[in-house]
Length: 408
Ligand code: PLP
Image (cartoon, rainbow, N blue to C red):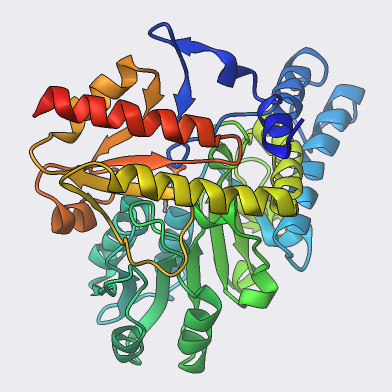
């Protein structure tokens, strides 16, 4: 069995059919599928270990707590964090960014007249929370353009990092362009000016080995569901310095040390940021999910496979007349391809492709400012995972040519 077949065999959903055709799942940037190890633990958390965590002394609660904290430790190892105390579980990338933005406001780290810098290629999750934060205090948002190859314009970025800037929030990999930003270099540029950096790793964490200490960033955020885990669980990595100095986000149970009506003290980091009952199953499932991701990222055969898939996908896309691939000149990209086709509406193409068994994304893909600048009607996006095969990509090329000839 090849490495891809071996990986693929662990995802039961990939053997189902859609419209009587074998499913080719190409919407992985929206959410990935889950392997047996995650599905099995998800079920065991319900039928074996269901209890609330951190608060009781009984066996089930101890088991659930242990599994949840094991998930945290696994995430810390996976991203090279200093310790598990640097890992806050949230409900996803969006929640992690909202947490940091709100705490910057509440903690007085963003004030009237200050600025937040983002790039043009951000997902709405890394735009709107900062707009809300800026509106609350009377700060402003500065947006740095991207180059033709899809990476952020480093010269313009450096120029935008003025003394008023209180945080740079930037994507590791854009969910539209698929281009990998040089985040260690970007962090260095910002730190040279004393500006903290938040990296949106929702797409980057899936396809690149991340070492937060080597990058040097202050915050790195991502979602479990894009990296083999269930929905509703996400990660906020923060340096000890920042997690200690930021105030709590939400108040409630589990985030407190001592509560009186007059005064409340808070739990230690990271529980200070985890008010209420967490997504216990999701947290636990992060362990098998990131362990699976790690084994794939370390597999040399899979790196070669990504390269082969990229070549095949580019050949297939190039065979469609009038097709424009976004950031076609990218030096380094993940297997994510957004494109427009002259005379073909993306929704129509996606609907026809679905009938042929292909799951693709269409529209603005939650990055409206960027997509608007590339297209008037939205785009189509095919995003691959290590379980996608060359055969699927070749079949996709045929299906796409057929769809286009039917729609023109
Ligand atoms: N950032 C990027 C780059 C993304 O691709 C996504 C999801 O597509 C998000 C943020 C938001 O992730 P979530 O909806 O899981 O919070």
